[in-house]
Image 1 (spheres, rainbow, N blue to C red):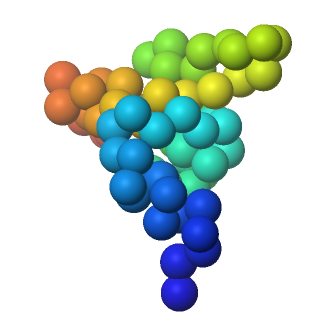
Image 2 (cartoon, one colour; image 1 turned 135 degrees about the horizontal axis):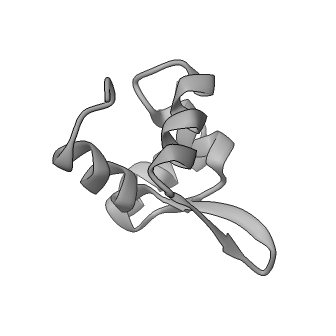
Length: 69
């Protein structure tokens, strides 16, 4: 059963702001590969010194290319 946090992310959709590790857990690839993808595509931003990922930017990046590249 999904957690409350997972349900909240699903409701927020592309506007969801999450930690890189939470975004990696949502990605359809291994967490370490997702983190590498986020770094390579400059998808990790910082808010008050803390790393964050905007889920919609991940989706847009995937639309423009592929997870394989």
